[in-house]
Length: 173
Image 1: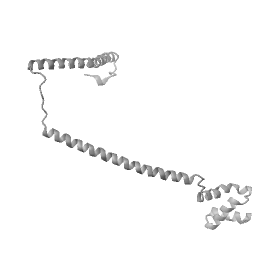
Image 2 (image 1 turned 30 degrees about the vertical axis):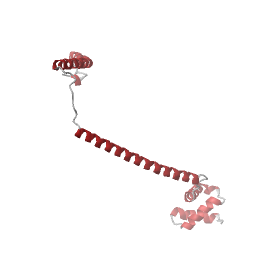
Image 3 (image 1 turned 120 degrees about the vertical axis):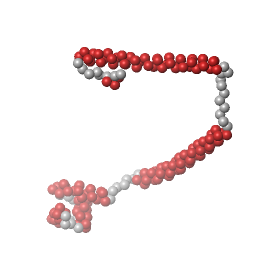
Image 4 (image 1 turned 135 degrees about the horizontal axis):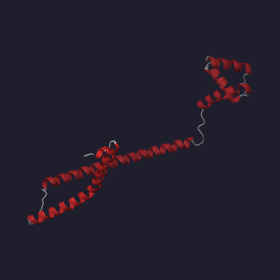
């Protein structure tokens, strides 16, 4: 179908006015897609060719293969989802059984606590020894904190000497 230049220009003016029908727009698309387009109308070519590309996209040669690959992976993911759900269910069942058995053993068998020392004085001596070891460890950990407190006090003295407030207000006692 060949259109003369005057008819194309009339259709273009109708198109810009918004008065063209779908069949007239289709004629313009065909003209710009298949016909010999004059130089002064080349600026409109992309507009009408782009509409045809959008309406009839080229899916490519690998489209079918890509769609089938996606379908295969969706079946695999469905299978894996089933396996995941089954594994979660199994974990819950095993945990419930373990909790039930643990609960039954604690209710039926009282825990017997035996003394490790027969002599109460010996037990008291061991307890004092354990508390002494904890006190040494506690004091060792407290030493860096004491250094920070000393630093804060020194900082406050310097700040007062220069008429400023302390730089470390958090450590005030």
